[in-house]
Every structure is written in C-alpha cells, then in structure tokens.
Length: 114
Length: 111
Image (cartoon, rainbow over all chains, first blue to last red; front, side, top):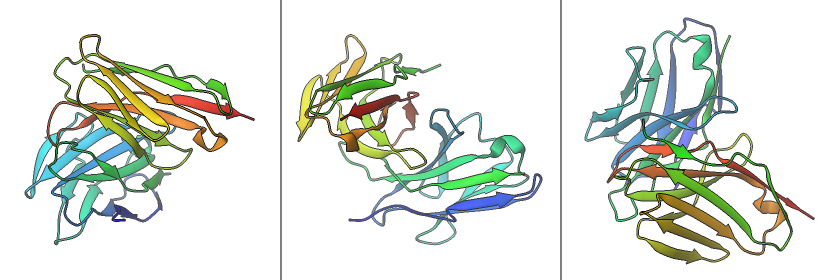
C-alpha cells in the first residue's frame, strides 16, 4: 500500500541552525501539507502546497519557514534559523482530489532544538 | 478562530464494550470530518471519514455526523486492548483545505 515517507526520523540541531525536513508524498497525490505537534499538544497546520506554490499557510509559518518541491518526488520543509520552540514532531501529509479528500500522514520527524 | 473540541479523557472501557468518542466543531462551513488514531510517539492514522449527515459504518467503527448540532462521534464496538490510543477528530473546510484538529481523546481498553 502506498505511503508517505519522511526523513530523518529524528533530527537534533543547535539553536540558530538551519534544518531541512524531507518528505516523499504518495505518488499520485497532488496536494501536500506540513503539520507539527509539540509534545502533549494538538496537531497544528503549517502549510499546504499545490501546483508548485503555497495554497494556504498558518500564522506559525513565518519567514523562517519555507517549502519546496525540488523534484518530482520530494517535498521539503526548511527552517532557516531554528528556535527552542521549534522542537516538535513534524508531519508531512498528502492527498488526492477526491470525494473523501483524505490526508494521509507520514511517520513524522522529531526535531529537537538544543 | 475555528475550533474543534474533544474531551481529553482518559475514557476507560472494558474489553468487548462499546467506546463512544465525541467531537464538536465551531465552523458551520466545515465539509469533511475525519477520525484519526494516534499511538504515543506515532503519526495520525486514518480510521474513518464522513461528510454526509447520518451514520457510516466500517467494521467495528461507526462515525456519526450531525451538521445541525455541529457534532461528530465515533463508536468502537467490541473494543480491544489494541484500540487503546488517542483518537483525533479533524475537520476541513473544503477540497484540499487544511485540517483543524481537536486535542484528542485518550481511550484505554482494560482487560
């Protein structure tokens, strides 16, 4: 069964460093998303992406964040200068256009900022 | 601010019983409703989706939607210890739009 994959599973970085989180969405899906979940809190939307541009972004997704689809398979989230409060699980999701409009989540990347 | 509300629990049910999980949402424009299961440290895993008023059944799971009351529920029949997890209610406002999640209800199925 097709699934969303994410790398790395765990990333440890120093405050102020740049990180890139990678995702490979399900191959026939056209919509891509990033969410994050701070430990013990709810899953929060960051950004959606379609046709090589951002469709929607949340207040969390400020100038420190960017997304890119550098090739036909990868979808990346870059945090330019990490802060302690960026420590969270980051989930990539993808969906196809259908009646269900279901988003399927990858396994997540645990980002720890020291 | 669009909100999705869930009782955080824990909801404790004995093995074999019916677990009933509830969710309310504030945005009347919400169109699709999802239940995800999340084990500790793992990602959300889709259980069911529903977008029409009424009931939708899939195996041991039944989702119920009442748009007039802005209420979604999930029933789990014959609960098993492996059902012990946090159940997340999520809604979206239309095709390919963002999901807004509730905080989740922690379910414990006891032997």
